[in-house]
Image (cartoon, rainbow, N blue to C red; front, side, top):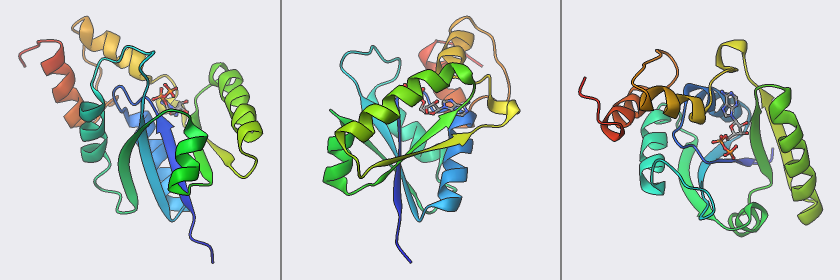
Length: 163
Ligand code: ADP
């Protein structure tokens, strides 16, 4: 049997229960999964790369075959360098589909050996995005069940909320 290593790239700014669910499902199928935080100088992030990695590490600590790392530059270059052949992406709704479809075709064009696997989320996670979570905390609201406890703590610290 082949030992298959998959990469789940994303901004994870911050990691949500939606991301964790996708990582759990991928980790059940592939031998190894690396959740990799993208360093994108073009995109203003709320959390630093280190903070995003730290939150992801703690949130995924229950999965023994999952590691957390970060990368910059072109995804396919990083994958070749680290010998990954599989990209994992999560799909929430049709709105994700167009972007994901285009990116998968582009990556395939750049590197035909690399396969993108999509995992369709469940309804209970389909409305969760890092963006929405950030806005909710920024404006002082709390919605249970959207993020793991470490992220909840960090969001409160970041947006200066005391309890
Ligand atoms: P990016 O900025 O690269 O879109 P994200 O951190 O937003 O990165 O998401 C990484 C991946 O996880 C994407 O494939 C995205 O569609 C998926 N994802 C994000 N939130 C959810 C969710 N709630 N359910 C399933 N997949 C999700």
